Image (cartoon, rainbow, N blue to C red; front, side, top):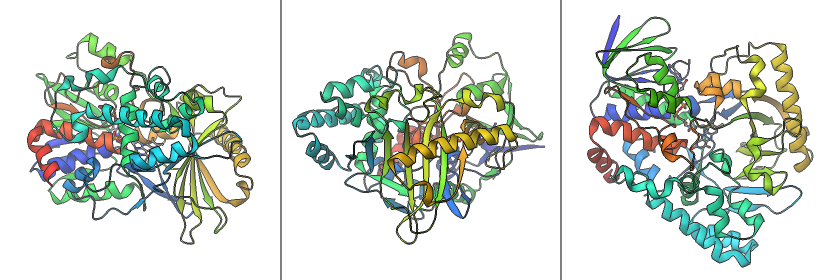
Length: 502
Ligand SMILES: Cc1cc2nc3c(=O)[nH]c(=O)nc-3n(C[C@H](O)[C@H](O)[C@H](O)COP(=O)(O)OP(=O)(O)OC[C@H]3O[C@@H](n4cnc5c(N)ncnc54)[C@H](O)[C@@H]3O)c2cc1C
């Protein structure tokens, strides 16, 4: 059987679904193929122990009227159905270190951001202003970020600038330097490698406005599915693509694990580029390209403890917490020593009906190597583990270490818990298909910026890439990548004009 559509999309993460919705809106018939039983990839939310958990979207930036993501979401019709809650404007993110009782806020809007931090570091007001100026300057080098058509070379002056060094050059107080880098979990920052533009584009979007998706990130996937279906498209679950056939220089068909065949004028892959190219098994790609892909480093992975609280016991705060046992850990969390793990965590709360906290997701870095003994076992999505007792014992031990660590900052925390479960790098690998459970895909490196650059075009003219590995990860980054990829078919000028003008 060969099913033909204008565009076959591999993977139903935000990248795949948004391409499908944009192209559907513009008259293309799309078929989305998703390996899991549920769509959405990192957008997925799920119920466990009577509570709703997000997998990979705890908060979103740039969603206030007139801001970039607001315009994109408006264009696609996402906003009316989306239940959003604005995080605390005086501090959407709080950074905390060791026994220091002070919580250092990241506030929304630049004047408030500056005022809040300058109240704690009065001598550094000018430095904080300089830091904000540098963020906005960096954002200006990325026309697409501002929904403008630009040239590939526009951003070049920004690509090799290091995040840590730039932050440190703005302010001299060591503690403040670490505060300003304190939410670098958002991009799994690496001291010598992370470019400043990654920090700037992400942090700017949250300073503009920061939102929690009440009802889970899955709402985004559900609405996008409706847009795709109403435009005559299809989304097939349990359809793992195992081969992309290339004939006469073009993709002729895409084949799923169960032998179904799909063909289209275009094929868009939302998978990691290494995975996509691996599925083609063609010799069309030059050795230099393949070597570059093979050399990609990926962002690290994480261990996440998802907790359900007893009713009415744990206070809810409308902000996220980034905690480090020592300020100097801000840039070296990913290089932890297993015997000292954990030393840092990020905590995301949801609110219960009585105004206290309903759930907490506590995330701390974990390298895939820790799960190597079970690497040969494969789960799909969040189905019950089939990795054996050793793996269960591993999760149990790590959970209890993390809980002990959290208990030190929040005495009584453990007593507030009704139930908990953990996810590991293996969960991420199997759920999203990212290599080694990498959180955000390809690690950008300011030392060799073009080496880590991934174009949406490939050597195969009808095979395009999309998703978090292109320009930037995250809801905003992936949305921008979907515009670039879809714009290849619709015309970028046309598409950006539509998005800008509603
Ligand atoms: C723990 C965590 C927390 C995060 N928190 C935030 C946050 O708070 N805010 C934010 O903006 N971003 C956050 N992110 C990042 C953001 O969620 C991702 O960058 C983004 O959702 C990735 O979208 P994607 O479409 O590129 O990839 P994915 O969501 O990974 O989608 C890829 C899809 O392809 C499917 N697939 C894989 N292989 C195949 C195959 N062979 N055949 C068919 N289908 C296949 C997968 O099942 C998946 O559905 C977080 C990420 C993680 C991991």
